[in-house]
Image 1 (spheres, rainbow, N blue to C red):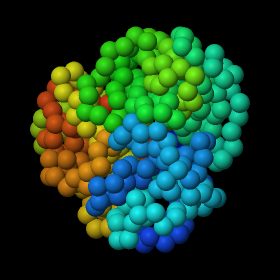
Image 2: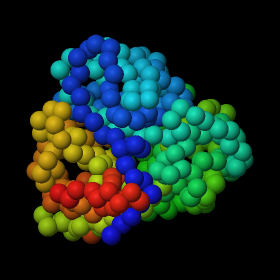
Image 3: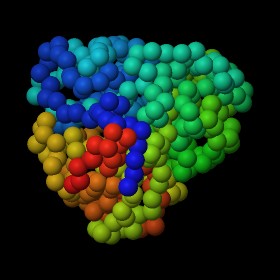
Length: 351
């Protein structure tokens, strides 16, 4: 049985669905987030990212290489119980069905980090294995501090003031490969991207200019596994409706999957019970069939080949879609949820 130091996962990560009303409003989560990722499920809008480190009222997107902007299509403010929205139609359009994923980092607090060659400003939630950093790289092999207590196992990074792609590090690809978040591209081989050096307990490595122009402000999001709460790992598909069972040690609330074999890029796939068949109601039985693609503006996909079971201790592919379950193909993932039993001995319900 998996135990965890996270007694209540929803103090650190919350997935929620809401119907837009094009009126200024509050989305209540029960915690203060620092990074909110929102997508309209029934409308071809961009994915909207807002974070407390670069500032509320600003927007980045996962499906484009656009610079951060202040169009109003963003979280307006972060508050102790959630976040607020304006009446902007992209993130709060009338009758739009939206889903948001929210992570807590430092709950609005930051620190100056000098562990790396490049000084970084960090907002970190060490217990939950999530942090954000901003830094300005030079054109040299160097590093930045991430603020966690162990090596990040997944990183998103880019220069956010210009037109740059989000570059992804995942431990299952290794330190000489990356993928671009906004495309279907194959994993790219590049010894300079991470300076061919695996992140360690204090810093991440890069040759400046690989994820944006040297001298340009950069942002990085870092995740690492925490027993009974989150897992960053990989699995091989079998191309069968009786797909692989992936043990996590907790009941997932969110799973992010992408292909890392060579030859085919494929999309970035997101699952959550909050991507429902009926708006604003969690999926209450397996299999989950609806997904969001992080690299496109597409509406939620409801294809039966995406079927997946969320179980009390992991997830199991039930569909044969190539994005998640091609035979003998390698897939990286990040999952977050709640252990069977936390340190307060409160059991997690099974499905």
